[in-house]
Image 1 (cartoon, rainbow, N blue to C red):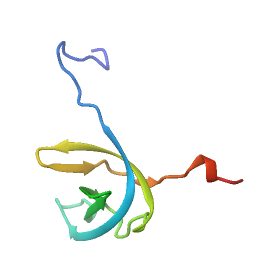
Image 2 (image 1 turned 180 degrees about the vertical axis):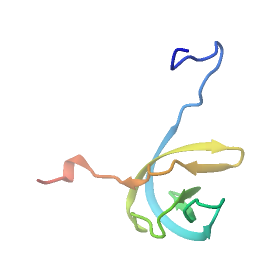
Image 3 (image 1 turned 90 degrees about the vertical axis):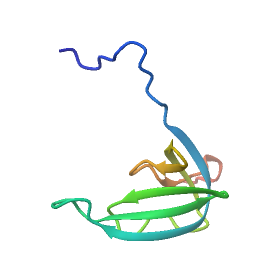
Length: 98
């Protein structure tokens, strides 16, 4: 069967992109979903006044409060979930020096 085949009329929801200043980060966990799976930590992030949820295996975030961050996310019902491994620090090209 051919790969990449999609049913006609099926529209995949596009990932949304976000950028803003990380105001607050609270950690929950660790959670163990099932046997053999690594511990997951759930972070509740406040970015530019909007609430987001981020779930990852690392006990510490790679960003800190006050950093300008960029990320991909999806809206599910009433929550915004940041995609795993998509949260990072925004680097302004104008201020970047080699």
